[in-house]
Amino acid sequence: MSAGANFYIVGRDPAGMPHPDVPKKDLYEATHGGKTLSMAPGLKTLEIIPFRVAAYDKSVSQMAFFDPKRREDFDFISGTRMRALARSGENPPDGFMAQKVI
Image 1 (cartoon, rainbow, N blue to C red):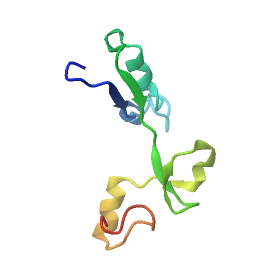
Image 2 (image 1 turned 120 degrees about the vertical axis):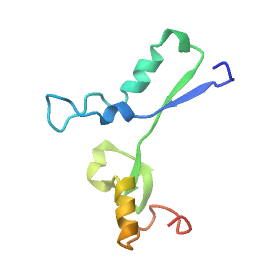
Image 3 (image 1 turned 180 degrees about the vertical axis):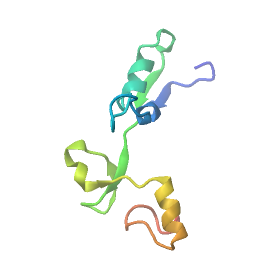
Image 4 (image 1 turned 180 degrees about the horizontal axis):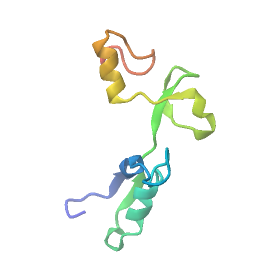
């Protein structure tokens, strides 16, 4: 803020922490980081912008913001999976990224 920032984009990193007692459940929900920061007393002048999760939408063969109501249409392609595809000489699905990048 002292450097002139007016916005802060909050990711979902805490959501990836597994719950110690409940299998296959995260300890925090995806919006927990943004909610916590929005309650911080010293950040009233900073606009907290929640990060929207994007994934590969198989129904339209392109990246799109994730819609939990259509969970089965989305493929979350991780960096680990991208490296595995590269090692095996495979390309990601069409529409996942620009051909120049591949």
